[in-house]
Amino acid sequence: MYLAVMLTRKVGFLLFDQFTAMDITGPLEAFATVSEVSQSCYEPVMIGLRAGSVMSESGVQMVADVACNANPVSVNW
View 1 (cartoon, rainbow, N blue to C red):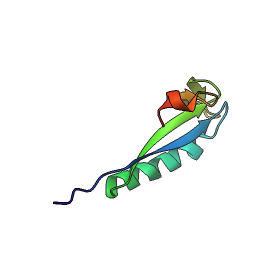
View 2 (cartoon, rainbow, N blue to C red):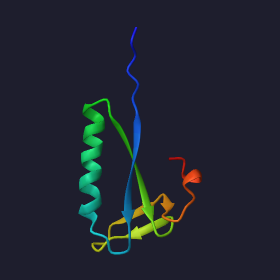
View 3 (cartoon, rainbow, N blue to C red):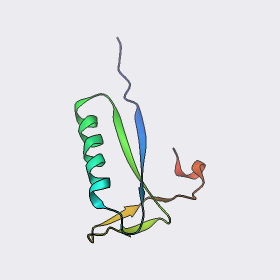
View 4 (tube, rainbow, N blue to C red):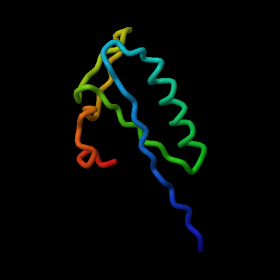
């Protein structure tokens, strides 16, 4: 019996002060759709200059999971 293994790929999104929300939300939706309709699975990781809340130019806030200077080993890529 053959079982398909679903490989999860992490995709990083860089957040910075005054980013344009559509530049993040559009690609996020595309990766979510691909994950729903195929055997590919994508896990978004938000990256910022520092971990925590980042404000877009329109006031939408997103949360950076990790800082861009984080130790890659501790991020669990």
